[in-house]
Length: 327
Image (cartoon, rainbow, N blue to C red; front, side, top):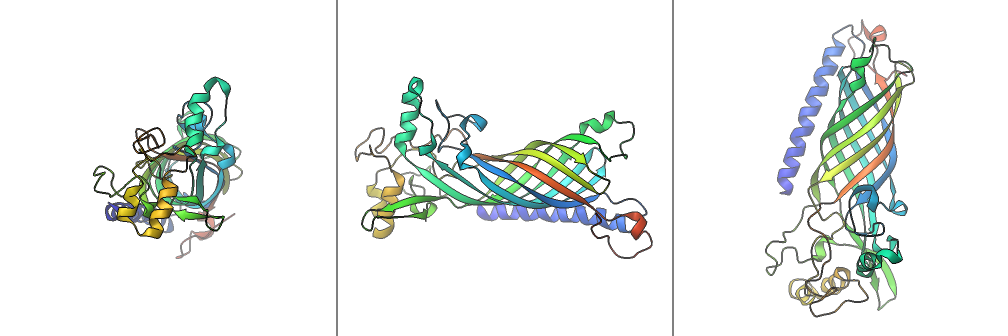
């Protein structure tokens, strides 16, 4: 699975580079103004998954958003605009995600719904590295009299694409022997029995996964060569293990069957940190609900994007070199 994801991403990346290179070559050989942009983006990144959440029953998107778990993300991109209403972007972003059941807000009217998640007492963190290609659509261009006159213009847009991201969930482990706490990688611990013979349907998950970025934005043209955008981009993923939580608690004796004694001790603790845990079947024992496998994890960013046009025909019309950044 991991190799196929890498192969698909390489193909997407290659095709994007070829497309961008073709546009750049065409520009270098013509007298037309450059339709290339390059720039940077920054803004908060937030997790949508099993851990944490607001009061009441766990749900999706903003209702389950914990502001205190928000992390910053940064990225760079290049884009080309073959038409005023259409653009293609190649982006690389770096960020972090986290979640903690301790963040859940407790309300008396929905106490039973929150208590189950609070008592689960799990947490996680992970760094995120992602790359994606996306199409940008500017629908209001069709209502403009002079689309090429962009200075001072405000344009809303939508985007959708295909990306790949890498993650590595960690949980906070408390060593009672030394009374110390530190973060440990969760995937090698098989906290829900992934890869164990007793759970044939729980396969080892890949730390590299595909996503579908989709969002909306608003672009303002400061000048012909500089523009700034505000955008919200949601990532639909195809994994429920960004936070290493998906299904049910397992029999902790299995950790000692499949893992080394040192790993088994940590896995035993990290798989079930509830103060109400039991060794027999129950809400916080083997078979008890640990996560919701019916909904995949997701994350989103809210960012400011600064872009600079690359090249200008007046300066490079008679040059054999490819254009540089022009501010």
